[in-house]
Image (cartoon, rainbow, N blue to C red; front, side, top):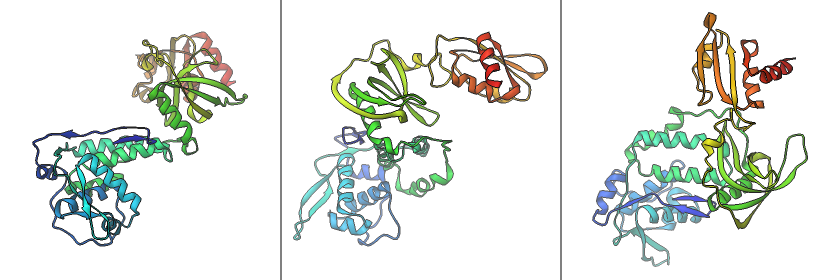
Length: 357
């Protein structure tokens, strides 16, 4: 189940009325003999707890919350949350109460569920995707991503659980110099909800070196760029569609007033003339010459969809881009020092000369 801040949900599951529960079990986990409830030797991840709980439900007449609390050394609230997940994806139901008045749980007899399996390659893709958003740690967005990962990883057979546990050593994502959003959890929550439900947001925006200002935003798109989050939407202050850095949004107030995203709005088209995240003036033909020392590196990457490369003398290349002239473009060229020079336009060459002094 995908849950964002407890506001919207969506389950990923397949049902088939004729599929026996035993077939579902074979898809989810290997069969283990019943084990006595005892204290674990190590901590369990949510995915591992769910797998073990499913096995117990299959091999025992019933389980209770106190039994599961003792087995996994977690509190009642955690077990109840896990049981809610199992009720949604593998058909668990209540089965009366014990003499101690504790609820008993067992696999549902009236609902048959067929769960799809995921391959190890898909498991790796999920893991890598989750780690792309590691920089959002401390937010509801990251907690929802982690929850989805655990729920989908439950579909991986337990005989590969040792491989799944080793994924952090086998596959790693570097996050560069990410921005922290833990303190902006409420802002991010409002932005995502505003985008999904198409509701206007009153916000206070901080500009570098300038005074903050109050604006009303119609949020269209949340953008991930270089391990940072940005919001594209119509600004009432600017009376135009603009890009806002999420960490510069100081306060938000999600109202009830809705808006309509223009039918011709397309984020890919919006950023088509941008070299990075900043959308500048009208795009123009930019030509930059790189000497032989850096040419192989520059050639090896697609810096913009419009990029074209032409070989020139002595191993040098000329790179043509149709983009707006922005600070990001200047910063990119300056990063190559004397190995890069501007061929066109003259206005960009002048800006680069001024920057270099």
